Image (cartoon, rainbow, N blue to C red):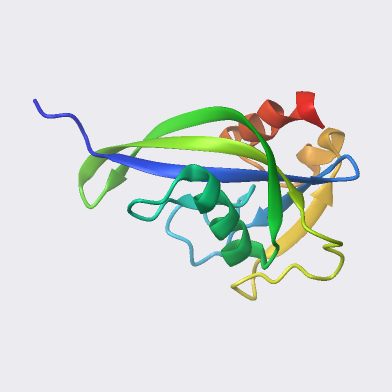
Length: 141
């Protein structure tokens, strides 16, 4: 039995002043529509996780960032075109470059963004997977 293909991802736990940036996904998303989470996405072929996380941050929020450190890894299995796929993700603590106030540009009009204190994560609909990614970064805030 051959191993399922693997997809590599990278996630950014963006922090500023003790708050974490969460983004609500569009209702048109195939995966977890309208769920809150950290900016994250698939790596391009040949792209390293450090470059990928900063690219995804810019694509999903318009923000530039600086990686402080890798805080952990996550993995999950999903279905891609009828085939089981293992997803392996590197998670990074990222600080925004400059002052991000008013500079968050979301690709879809039905998305939202919020800077939340760790104690306020339950004020939005965040799934356990994204909550765990944020928890990986908390010791470094």
